[in-house]
Image (tube, rainbow, N blue to C red; front, side):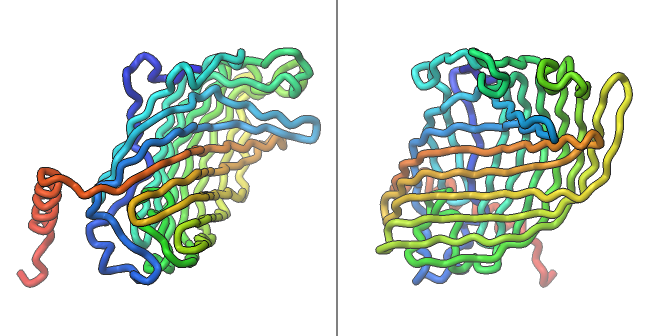
Length: 342
């Protein structure tokens, strides 16, 4: 398995993070949440990102998968900054004949006290189908198949004082009692799916000649998030949001294209299972976004983007230099604020 950055010594991933952490202590119910934003949270983790393409109509259903790497990484969070470094080592990624995928996968999940923001930049080339999908003895490789998608979603938490996303995903808080929160917001996406020939194998669908799909999506959404806590330390966090998006899709074939304007839902979900305490956080997590659309050909397309992760994190007292840098940062931010009395 190789990624777009395989020749680089390190893969830099600006992953799950937090913002506005310096002001969070005054905004929480401390009987539910303990905040450690002034601690240095260090972590080791294993993660795998993906951006799959599912296509189906009345005659068939196919799922193209990328050959992404399983990465081993380290990271740290202090106040409002999170930095993760990871790399897909060869011993973690044996070659099973699934071909090569070149990709740049930018996923940023930002968790503030009252907001959760997801930003996606998906740039993939090279997919495969499992042998059973085409009734073959080997994988069906599509090195020419490309996926480009950018998008973002923003949701407001109604109960950020008692419910913490950070406890599960950033590991700089500890949720000690069960709590949940309603979510409401909106999202926007733009994407292109294209290949050098028909997107579906000609041996399975000779009548399908579409080589490119372009789409736009925009709409409001809402949902709910909840953390169940057992004996203060063991927890399970689940989150589900649904969006009703106005969707415009263009399908291209033989130098012609057809457009369809329709309303299509998207679903986003997160799940975490783990252990949390004053010093340690150990968890397994999944963040997933489903972007769906339908073309004029009555073919349905689903782009499933996400990240699996196993994390072991510990909190430390920061050193003097780090504390000094944080004080200087806060001083500069405070001096930059406008004086409403002037």
